[in-house]
Image (tube, rainbow, N blue to C red; front, side, top):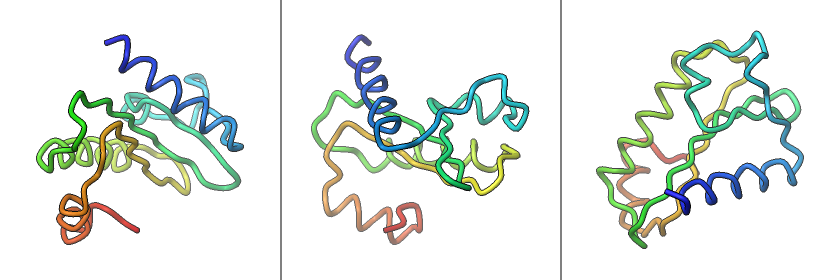
Length: 110
């Protein structure tokens, strides 16, 4: 669990270093569903709901990725944030086969 927490913390810091501003839990624009995501950032006019997944395996598994995408899409669907986009950050390698399957199912947008 410590590795997962450290990975999530690192991801948050990377977003902040790159000019993203974290939206606080007290921000009235947030709804409960979006708050369940790991981070909500704003940059310019866009709002990003970020879900971070730390996997113990080096290669990602399609079924697990689909569940993570479904979770992120749920946050997007039930939030009232303006100009919202979703970002899924994973700790494992996204093999070409996995990319192809996700792109064919319109889950992964290049």
